[in-house]
Image 1: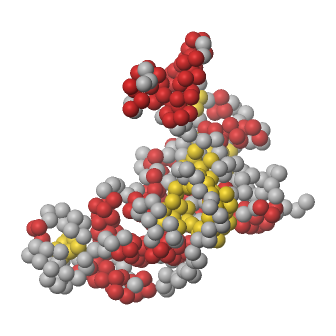
Image 2: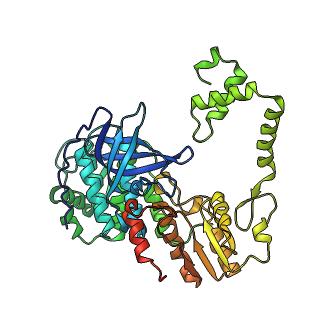
Length: 269
Length: 202
């Protein structure tokens, strides 16, 4: 199992001064006015864009159904003063599997949330788009979302220049030994037992968890997908990467918390 | 309080700021509304102010179905003729839409939203625990999950289905298909696919 290779997308063709075409994935939607929506989408050549889609909440809207959450779509856009306007839309991949699978839906929400919080508007990042599309496809296919999500997180961090240091101590820069080392979100890497006190907020990570991250980094998704991962290790890895992501976004990330609530069944109260 | 306070009298600016808090109202529209109120009669202004205060003072949520109501329990919940099924919707306005059809003779349950992980809206922020309690108590013939047919609505329905099935109640979801007045050519793949799957004999 590997992340599917996304066919290279042709560069945007300027139709005229005002109109342009792009592929996009819908990350979030906000109802606006009588029947409009403001969308935040991620595109291969233009990064994150905020768009306005008019009349899409009406049942007879031709655009509406193509602009659903997590849909990979082809868009025709008209430049506006503030937000560009969606003038045409077609579905390329609706990721139907996300609709009836709460695990897939929760993890798709998480990867969307990371792109919303960690990327800047109109900052091109083709690698991030490729990761997004590949991960959504695997979620929709019902692949266990754990490995896919950790792969997305680690590679998105790398694509944005925040890759954590997995091989050398962030304090003394000596190679890390196969012992319990502490992960420091603030320093973006591990601290060896000697440097451990440099950052009081660093938390210990087991040898197995460190190995998982290095295997994921060196050998990719297919290699870690084969590894047996128990609940304890899952909590550890989700916590380590989550802690680092929270430190970078400087805010609470909601999706995985909500996913845990959905998974655990009956709501509290 | 923007930089406009120098040229705009303070009470006018305050009204503009209040209007600007409303959904879909930007600073330009807010100014237009404020100046409209300024030019209008005193009676109109009083009527608007009183109407706003009245909804805040007299309207509350029905303790049974959580629809907005003046009386608790609400008219629908108090009507003995309405029984059998509970129709679960996201918003009070959805009840209005369903009532307009005149086709549904059961009662409602308003969740006040749908699951949205990115915004941090989980099951605990919705009236879901109350729904489960109600189903256990009232033992309805059917629970219709009429949340929106978008991704959050579908996820909410999937979650509710998971919780309701063990209670032994019949759980349904409204059919999806082509809108009245819709053109087949312009239908999206999901809708058209579901419309075909759910076709009926004439």
